[in-house]
Every structure is written in structure tokens, then in C-alpha cells.
Length: 155
Image 1 (tube, helix red, strand yellow):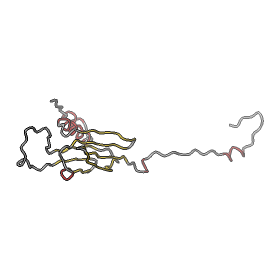
Image 2 (cartoon, rainbow, N blue to C red; image 1 turned 180 degrees about the horizontal axis):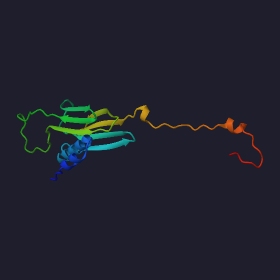
Image 3 (cartoon, rainbow, N blue to C red; image 1 turned 60 degrees about the horizontal axis):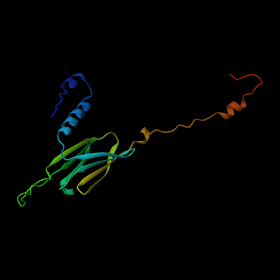
């Protein structure tokens, strides 16, 4: 396992605490691979996060968005007293998976099917931030009213 010391970064940056925290969180998330997940771009402003949650029921999963942080938690009740496993291949352990969302990205839907939790995301830019086309007008009346003399060019 490889670890990175970011303390020199903290000493040399001022006002970029959020960026440094994102780097720390990304390094910590890379260390744990459970549960596995996919992030898919489904359209220009649409995304889908799929998390493999085999063995979890919808009431054992919690999805929360707070301050651009999507948190998915799985809490399994300990009921192994009644079950005797010869081989246990499904982890079914508690987990916290966090995803940092960009500004204006909102969760639109969450579905659980076939052991996959699919969370749909949409980037919804406010009207003030959307690009808009500006029409260029021509002043036909001004150019038509100026007299044109043969052989001379207008300045």
C-alpha cells in the first residue's frame, strides 16, 4: 500500500483547504475497494453511479446529499446467529461510500435492482450561467440614408 504525505502541500497553500481535503479523501477512498462501483456519463449533463450492494435490502441503505457530498451508507443487521455458512463469499459488511459532486449536480433518482444500486445525477445550471446567443443587428437604415457618390469610398 502506498501512502502520500500532503503536509508540504498544506504548508504552501492558503485558502485551498477544500482542494487539499479532496485529495486526502480521494487517497483514503482508494484504500478501500468495498463496495465496488462504476461512474458512467449517460448524456452531456447526466451521470449514473452504480454500486454493487449484493445482499442489502432498500431499508438497509441510506443515500444522502449534503453540501455537494453524496454519501451512500449500508448498514447490515447482525443476524448470523441463525445461519451457518460453509463458505461466505458475499461480504455484506457495513460501508460508507462518498462522492464529491460538482456545483449544480443534483440526484434525480435511485433504484435498486439485481444487487446494483443505481443513482442518477443531473447537472442543472441556473439560467444566469447558461450560455446564450446574442443576435447581431445591422443598421440598414443608417447605411441606406448616406449618399453614395460614384468613384468615392465612404470612410
